[in-house]
Length: 315
Ligand code: CUA
Image (tube, rainbow, N blue to C red; front, side, top):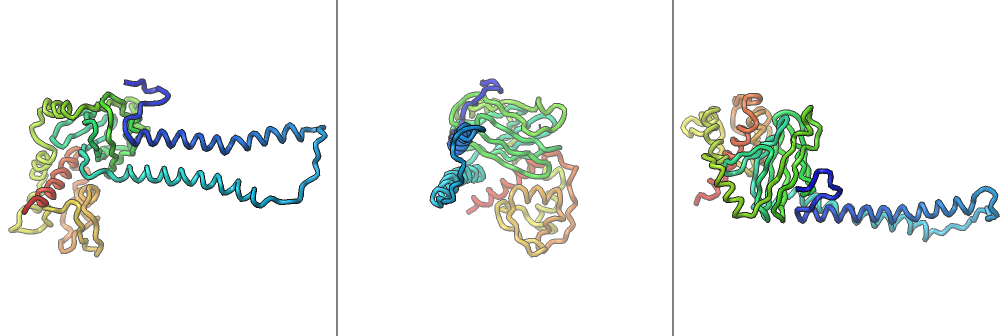
């Protein structure tokens, strides 16, 4: 593994290479645009120094072409970077549909990762090479930020909100993961490793973890133990909307609004049920804010999402 202080960390993904190119290009362009200014500055300073014989009669003639050229050409060049960087940014916001989803819970001062099969790890993240990975992240306490120098990605992890980032590592190896947001006394110790493995080795690693239940199955158990199933599962006493097939679908609210049932919607519905009351239902659901640990919440959300998938596969 590279030392944290290495000047130029390894680039582990196509995105990382692109960020490097952007950085080098932008530094080059800045040099190209600043250099003539400093050269001219130096030249004028020498030529028009006190006591020199250079003529100081002002020239009245204006050269519009030159004026436009030195304003518009640099502007155009900088605009190229604006579009290029914008594209790279939007690429980061659009994870591929077949991405492997790993849940991340941050807390003072550790990173907890949960794989779809239920495997859990702390301050270590095992991922397969050549496969898009989507990290769906939340915090149990304060703001943290999950940073992978080798992947050139970093995203804040917030309490009460799900954020994500995705990557596709191109090479096996062990690389750093860090917290990049000052989060308290032991912030500097909130770090670990991302272990990128060949797919077969990753499968073997998953099998070795001996997870008895998948993330969604754990969520199903919690769905009953927190009493969610009491209202959301029994069709004979329908008091609450069914959650089957809800994920990713539009939901009409009592307010007349229509929202999409994404991770954030499900999280809000559990913690702040009064925020989005579904059309046709009374606002009777109790709030679970402060009653569900972050990890349980992640499992519940995984379960509700799995209901959506089951529904999709129904003939
Ligand atoms: Cu978590 Cu700094």
